[in-house]
Structure formats: structure tokens, C-alpha cells
Length: 286
View 1: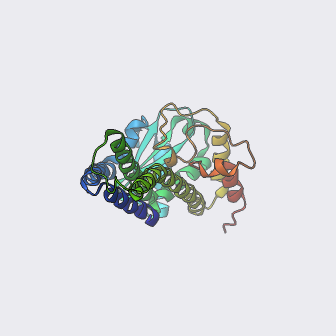
View 2 (view 1 turned 135 degrees about the vertical axis):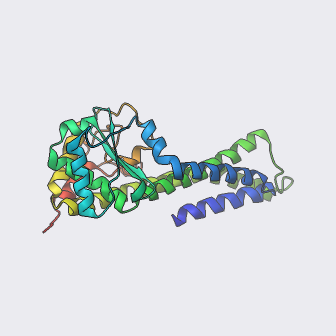
View 3 (view 1 turned 45 degrees about the vertical axis):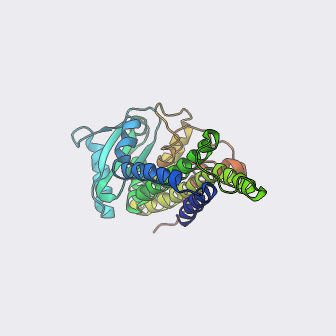
């Protein structure tokens, strides 16, 4: 989070210095602030809507509701809103800004393919995201990534449109500074995205461990992940902006490679499922 803030401040300062005017930066900040407020207070509903999720009541699926309620009692968390996504791919995610405003969504494919122990493992994983405030963290991270991308985009576009009054246009130092600014504007969103993906992968490992501790049965989640990995078709409504929220990659990418390359790992929204299963299988929970 600190690196994100440093990136935003450094990029903003560099752009304002190059133009010798904070007007463009001020516009970017105002737009980003509005976007952040919308994302923080309504981001979960936007995510659920774009995923095609439908809220259910207890009478609609008593078994799913009972699993969620029992795990909430065990974890001491309030019962979240429950959604079902009509999609054959087995998957699930949690969203919201805090446990009191959380939602858990599962696909019809997940309900059809998993037994009760496996379903409990998946729901426990998602409730761990809620209890660890990962849902808020990832929302904040997504907002910061958007801010960096927005500021960078405005700066690069302003170069093409010739907006603003650049500092030092008549000397070599000014030209060098402008080149540095363009390079920084191009690289900052890439670096921000890599940090976002790294945070997402780490939080998945933590939710796996906490979910296993909650159910006291890590094999349930391990078996669920095995079944999820066997389905290699993408979700019908998938977005790169929300892919990191799901328990498994919604693109349905195969995990057949035992040793994925360095670049494949750092560009992935999730750690390799085989690694997650192996860790769960070797957990010693008494």
C-alpha cells in the first residue's frame, strides 16, 4: 500500500513539475476521487451486477444458506448477502467494504459439482477473505491502480494534444525530464498492476489457510480446488478487473504445467492451484 501511495505522489509531482502547472494533475485527482468514492461505496454492487449474480433468500437454497450461516457462527462474522451466478464454471468470490456490508457469490456450477464438505471449504475460504478485510484491501488496491492508470493516461494524452505549458522546453534538461516523465507514465501502471497481482496471490494463500482452520478439514477445500481445476472453460461473464476476486481464475486457464515460468507466475491473478492443494494436503490441524 505504501508503494502504491509513493507511486501516485511521485507520478503526480513529476507531471506537475514538467508542466509547471498543477491544473492537469488537479483534474486527474478530482476524477480519481469521484471514481474512488463510487468504487468504495458501490463497487460491490457493480461487481455483482457485471458478474450476473442474483441475490437469494434462505428458501431459495436452504443448504447453501445453512453452510454460510454455520460458518459465520463459527467465525463470529455477520451473515453476508448470498448470491448465485448462473454459470457452469465452479467458482466463487466475496466482495464488500467490510464484514457488515459483505456479499458472497457462488456459481451454479460450484453447487452442482461440490459435495457439502467441499462447499464448506470454499465458503470458509471466502469468509476468511471477509474476516481478514481482504475485500476492502483489494477494493482499495483496485482504486489505487485506477488512479495511477488515470493520471498516466491523462499525461500521455496531453502530450499528443499539446496541452499545458512544459517547463524547460528550450534546453536539453527540459527534454530529458519530459522523456523521463513519459517513461514513468508508461511504467507506473504496469508496476501497479504487478503489485496488485502479488497482493492478490498472497491473500489467496492466507484465505486457504484460514479457511482450513475454520472448518478444521483442509481436505475439503483441497478436493474442491481439484474439481475446480478440472473445469477449463472460462466463465460466461468474465472481466480482468474482477478476476482476482474469485477463488480460481475465471478465465479457466489450465494448471497443467508443474513449473510455470517466472513471468507466468508474476502475471497470474492466483497462485498455481497445484501449489495450493499441496499446501492444504500437508497442513497439520489438530
